Amino acid sequence: MALTPSSNNQALLDAQLELWHHTFSYVKSMALKSALDLRIADAIHDHGGTATLPQIANKITLRRSRLPYLRRLMRVLTVTGIFRRVDLSAAAAAGGEHVYGLTPASRLLVVGSLNVAPFLTLILDSIFVSPFLGLGEWFQGELPNSTLFEMTHGHNLWDFTGRDAKFAELFDSGMVADSGFAMDIIIKECSDVFHGISSLIDVAGGLGGASQAISKAFPHVECSVLDLPHVVASAPAGTDVKYIAGDMFQSIPPANAVFLKWVMHDWGDAECVKILRNCKKAIPPRDQGGKVVIFDMVVGAGKSDPKHRETQVLFDLFIMFIDGAERDEQGWKKIIYEAGFSDYKIIPVVGVRSIIEVYP
Image 1 (cartoon, rainbow, N blue to C red):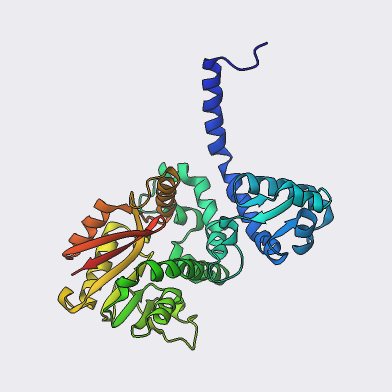
Image 2: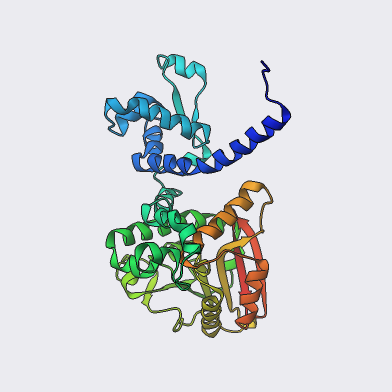
C-alpha cells in the first residue's frame, strides 16, 4: 500500500481541505467569542502572564467537569494564534500541565486602554452573526429594498439599536473601544492632520470616544459631537466635548473641520454624497483651513499581504448586511467629487483602514 496518495488524489484531497478550512472557519470565530465571554486573556494576564489550564479554570470559575473541554478550546486558540503554549520547561515546573501565555493578539483582549474586546464582542454577537445564515436567501429575495439585517430582525440597524437598550449599550461599548484603539494610533501617526484646526465636529461620533481623544491630545481644538437624540442622551458628563443632538442628513453644525470616523461605510453612494455635501456647507474654504477628515477603509490601500486584503474584502461583505460598502480609491473619488470637493489625500497608516483628507 502506498504511503502517499497519487498526485491526482492528492489534488482532490487538497481541494477538499481547502473547502473544509473555509467551512469550519466559523468555529474559529466562535472559539474567539468563547475566549471573550470567559475573559481568558484577563485570567492569564492576572496570573502574571502565564497560566496552566487549572489556573485559568479557577480564575474564570469554571466547573471542574468542563476542564477537558476547556483544554480542547485552548488547543484551537493556540493553533490559531490567539494564545501560545509556553516552552516545555515551564510545563515541567507546573507538574506536566500545559502553560499558556498571551500573544500580541490576545494582549489586545486584556482590560486596558487598548482593549478591543468590546468591539469584537459586538461583531460576534448573535444580532450581527445571525443575518449571515440567510445570506443566500437574501440574494434570492423578492424585497429589493430590504437589507440582510432588516430581513432577519425586521428593522434597520439604527431603529433596532434605538429600540433595544441592551444591544445599544453593546454597540456603544464596541464603538468606544474601537475609538480608543484607533485614535491612539491616529494621534501618534497622523498628528499633522489635526494641526491648524481650531474646531472640529465629530459627525455620528456616538459617545465621543474619538473626540475626547482628540481634545486631550490637542487642547486647542474645540471638539463637538453630532449624533441622534437617543445617543446624545447617553453622552458622558464632565468632558471637554460638546454634544449636539441632530441628523447629519439634515445639517451639520459649522466647524473648521468635520471628522467622520467609520461612518461612510454604513451608507450607499447617494447617502454618502448627501453627508459630504452637508460637510462642505459646514466648513470654511480650503485656504482658511477647511477640510473633512475621514477615517475609513480604502480597499487595496496599505499592505499587500493576503491577510490584509482578505480582511478588507471580508469587512466589505460584512457591512453589506446594512447596505453599506467598503470602497476602493475609485469609489471614494467618485463620491468626493460628486459632492463638490476639489481634492483628497489618502494616508494608509492605520492597519486595514486609512485617513482620507478631503478638501473643498
